[in-house]
Length: 283
Image (tube, rainbow, N blue to C red; front, top):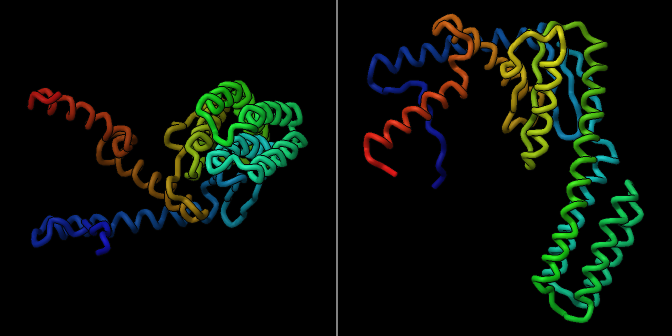
């Protein structure tokens, strides 16, 4: 049986509050549609970090900037290569497998950045030498391999971060020079991905850049957003339209613009949880 999320727009059912609730949602969608129109008309600029690109939407004009070039992809693939070695050797250490891994080592050694490629190749060669006559993959051999890779991983990650910083910031500066949007009309969106560390990195860079510009006096938490399940530019438009409407609604009805933020709800929930645990003598 398929389980799907139930629609709560008309809750509570059979109660006048349910109809009022439904009317609120209808009116909310009207306001959100207006926000979508303002974005698509170019009143707001979106800067989206998606896959290996930076996508900029200013009305109907959409531009793409490549952020993660071949060097960045090499750095990421080089770290993945060591994981491929582990899985391959865990399955078997017969002659065919060892020959395959030796071929990988030779290929890794020739890839840029050559210094790091050589380091990965050298420690992997040592691993192959340790197991070449044992027909098994001893825990001790893998443990030593892991220790030898620690400093290399640190270098790979540092290089990847610096590469991301250089490419992302230089393109943000270029976009800023080419456009003339006030900070209140700029939204920066990071699309979700399967690797949280890359998401977190882009968010950190966006927030730092946004806060560091003299003309950016707006709340960076409002203007820098994470799009969890985003796959298209329309998803970014929908996210920003929601943020715009929620901010105005919160300011008009609750007195301050952050009242509907998830972080505010979390702060209230944290206090309530602590009190509940205390009152009910829970550990």
